[in-house]
Length: 214
Image 1 (cartoon, rainbow, N blue to C red):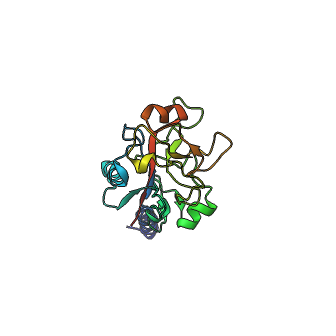
Image 2 (tube, rainbow, N blue to C red):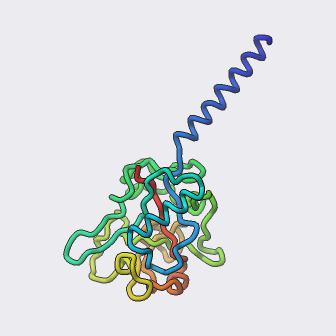
Image 3 (cartoon, helix red, strand yellow):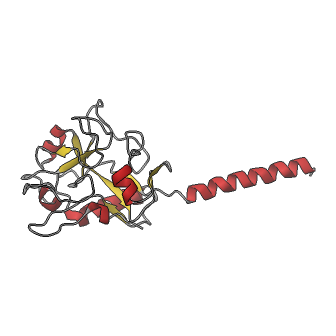
């Protein structure tokens, strides 16, 4: 084997090795659920929502991580659960290895990365947005833009802490950053109700964000 061929093979090995390391360093840690749970805002609480994230991640070979739904809960006259505190420290990448955010501050204060092209489902497919039929850009969060449930009123913003498919409402984000004059990925507006039909009428399908907390 001549020197030129050896050098070429060595170069290819280094190149492919670097790609392999790169892919391993960017495991999926963020996705939008490809399907909701089919019961409106009743997700079986945070436990049920987390289990749904885990199930979807497992189906695409990413079930070895600690998956958490990006959802807040409210508690009368006391602190609820903060979505931002449930999801670990980052960094988070989508199914195509695109960086979504390096940490919680980047995610909530500076984020411009979550868009129609990057807020993909667990298999790396695009979620329907404004202009698609049907529009499914409303994502359940129950959360203010800072990742907390500190709303300035006493209304229900979490479909009774994700147990109601009838009464109440849910705060929603826009994964495509379009619609209603509000471009927030996690706190655009409230839903019309908590039933599956109410979520559809608002412009969603009961989908939510999942993050790897480990």
